[in-house]
Image 1 (cartoon, rainbow over the protein chains, first blue to last red):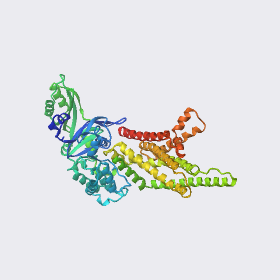
Image 2 (cartoon, chains in turn yellow, brown):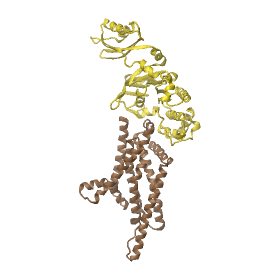
Image 3 (spheres, each protein chain N blue to C red):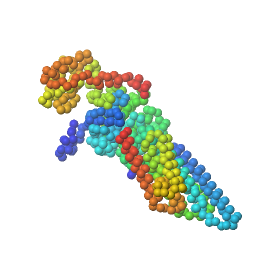
Length: 342
Length: 255
């Protein structure tokens, strides 16, 4: 990943294309009283399909709205295709296609007319416009209803028209907010297939609160809950990690201010029962780790002993309050049940 | 500016695909026809009275028919304009299509211009409907067309000013009815402020009366274009559209 410094340093560096399509750093969005998104950071590489997973009200929509330049962040930054969402909203908007949770449709328009209108909004002109409308209508299987009023369309068709408007200007990044919510099982499968078929050309983020959906189409998953980032990993890794894992959060410091995080990590990994150690962050020589173990191993005593014996300060040690497991439970609600509630 | 045109066309479509435009046109035709009929009836009666008493009074179609009709239409405008503007932003916000506009590479002022111009165009269409009656005057008489033109310019400007205020109010809510009622309240207020000039001539009363849209329409209905009235209307239009822009920005920041 290229930091800002290396990108503009020399002439040859200008030609380097950043490998990340989306870069979010320390993003926080605060409303009047509550914090919707709390210090989230992640990166998404070009061409990836990423699932944005979290229970309802976790802050998925807010994050997506920031990425589309619809809402400005309270603090932190978000970068889409190399452009900052606050400083260069126009460039960002040119490069994203966005499908909000309810497709933004005008019921009094015909499908073809609507797609033409959106195409014009996105800056497509002249003969190219009709060509693009035709192409996306074909791709999203709405060609047969092109002359129908949107008001008369079924839910599945509306969703596909919504997708068609999102890809009409062939955007680099596609942001889809709950693209399958409220659809029947057959429509869900069709929509998923459609999204998968778009994967090659676009970087896609799709939000969902249904775990199987992520497993079905996403390579990578970002889990957030209550505004906080819980995990970023591939689907296989996550599933493996989530089977009976207990997480302990610790903070280690040292009196002389010097602490080698790699050494600390190795030390922690050597503790009996530990299966995985993640270095979260470091502030003023205080390092925070997340240590995972199998359930029921109760490694906390051993961990504390190991740290103290190594001559470090143990500032904090507790079972992670926001355990993956807990969120996983919420997310593994069977799809049918969720569909019933929608 | 191309983007504003795209929005303009979409809004015009919205008006003429739904019953709104036709309903307003029918209602306006009816009202304007009634005003015209009453004005002409009074005019004819006065003419007959003049002949019977033998005193020849100056009979002027502009003065006795066109002017009262235009004045009445300007009042009707106060009632119609909320119906034209109430959906402009409230509907987009309610249905979520505002998110599409706000995440497209198009600037706020282009959206605002497109929408306001479309509302103004609909208002112009309504005014054109009332021209049918005036046409009859030209068939049977020789009214002076210059004050008539000025009168219609006044109606257009007054409409533009109230439409700008209505556009602003439409951004503050996602409920069309609320937007409509609030716009109507403001329109009504801007109308009745003028009444104070009937009994009070102090400085404060002049200020209040100056704020009324009706005060500034009077000269237009007489065929007089006064710079101070033009400035009033144009600055009100600017104020309304400026507030709309600010309101859209605040929606984005507060959300």
